Length: 164
Image 1 (cartoon, rainbow, N blue to C red):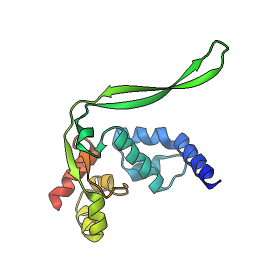
Image 2 (spheres, helix red, strand yellow):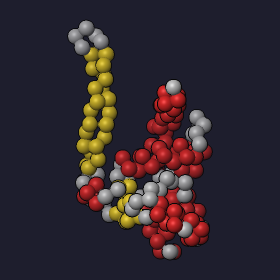
Image 3 (cartoon, rainbow, N blue to C red):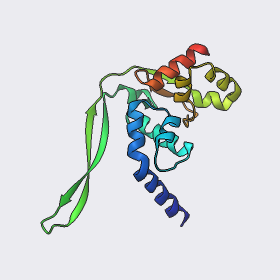
Image 4 (tube, rainbow, N blue to C red):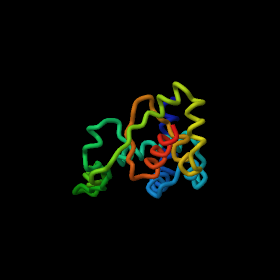
């Protein structure tokens, strides 16, 4: 029963805010700006998870070099189909969207936070407000990730490494 309640809650939150959050990510907003712009209340952690997923889905963050080498992303959409009796069904359609070659910077923030949180925060506090906000509140994994340098997040990561 608890799994169903969690799934329903996640579905409602994604339905209410998911599209808006993805749109704000495309505009370059950070997690705190997105949370303050939402109509339906969500915690900062829930917003950060959706933002992180959008970064991964749009190749702004990659987990390995193989992903970085691909020059396309796969977009998923659903199309309504009608059978000969008028019954409606949804069909999943995946399309490849060309994104071109990008430059990435390796990033190990999750590991740094785990090993020396005070040192990480000390360097993070040296950044400008917008750059600090782009990095802060994201759920950085313990493994190395690669961040697209052409994004505001990539610029913030580059600035962080220039101070450390």
